[in-house]
Amino acid sequence: MTLRLRYALSASFFFAYGAFALPFAPVILILPVAWVRWVIRMFYKGFRILARWTGLYRTELAPGTLQALRNCRGRIVAMNHVSLIDICIILSYLPDSTAIAKAGVLRNPALAAVARKMFIVNDESPERIVAECGKLLKRGVNIVVFPQGTRGGAKFHRGAARLALGLGAEILPVRIAYDPVVLDKRHPWYYAGDRTIQIALEALPPLKPEGADDFHHAQALTKKLISLLQFEPKYDIIFPDKPKTKEGGRT
Image (cartoon, rainbow, N blue to C red; front, side):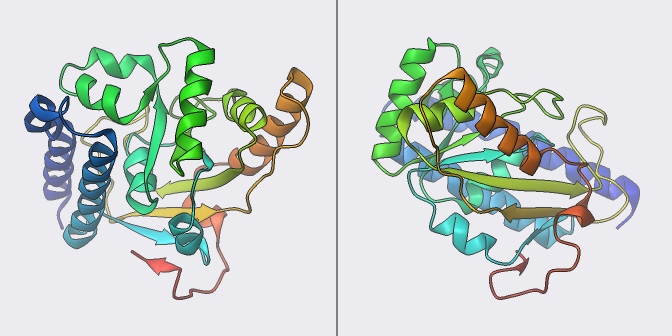
């Protein structure tokens, strides 16, 4: 595939990603929230499969990762944040799930209605966000959190740790990496690299919250997350030598 064709294909995927909400928004208010999450999850799954078929990118899973994601219920999924499509990739593998989204997503008129219904937007008080997360976790819904807050953020926030400690929920750390990196803050939105983009995904052993919901324990748990999730976003760092299994390989 020529470079120009890759860029054109990348642009078409980007527009499809943004335009998806336009026909969906008028009925968003009458659909049950669980249906909204299912529809968007199926769209993300189709997005991932089509990208593999066209050779734009492919996802490879570390051994055990597929099973860990499929069996994930009522957990906080903490993930490093590299690219704009991180959320598409992770939600396409998880069962019923949502995510905590930045309030800035509401400034996009095409996405605001869907985001408000699908995600937990952090424009409310911390108490209300924690209460909403607690209800969802009890129902078995997973909550994806990006501790970095923004793509490539250098500072890890304590939100995931505070949620885990306050609600007694396990954290499933997940690492993602791209080769080459796309849709980050350093490249233009149409950048697609010069070859098939490899996306590596690895679920790590879950972390059980220990201690009270206070600054000391939240800081300690956040440091554990940093040690697991803060690394150079290069594909071969995540699982360079692990053998492929039925649960690993390309997807």
